[in-house]
Amino acid sequence: MSRITSLLRRTFGIVKEHVGTDHFGNKYYFIPEQKTWTGRTVRAKRLVEAANPTEFEYLEGSIPSEWDAWIRGRRKVPPSVEELLKNEQYREQIKHKAQEVEQRDLALQAKEYEEGLVARPAQTIVKGHAATTQFGQTETSEDPVSTASTFVPGSWMPPAKDTPKT
Image (cartoon, rainbow, N blue to C red; front, top):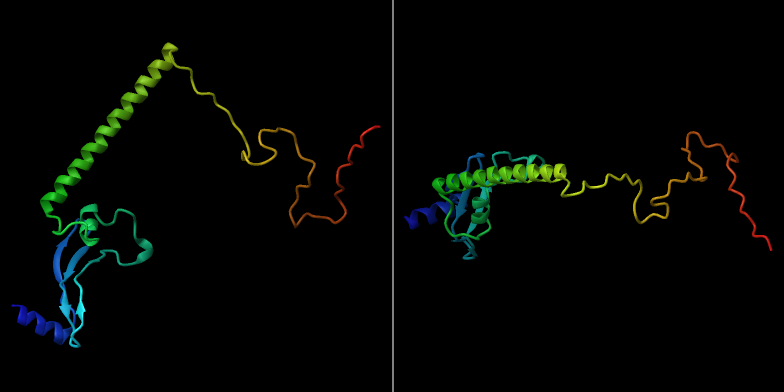
């Protein structure tokens, strides 16, 4: 068999072996280590043909984590369909349990607020950024506020500085 595949490789180029397909429709391939006609050794490669080949439409999570681990060489064997289904069910169980815990926590928080055991967080509105010099100040600025379309040269004068009395 290896003679036939090596003959095909030399004749037609790279022969890739289809390893699997995920539920998104991505196809995964393995290209075994091979020698070129010049005698150079090309190392084995793992690659994916995306179901959605346009790069700008790629979304995070378009490749399942099991297949990502196989592509990056963190695991030797590709994931089986059973393994993928089992892990997906496990992820759904974790999401469901997290929602239950969050709902219980919110209910406990509301109960503690009603009983007066915990003070409600203060609602403050602060405008600006803490690094600015005007942070927390409510005074209006005398600096000009204008856009280029409404600016009239000479219409603004800097505020008069108070001279200290001696």
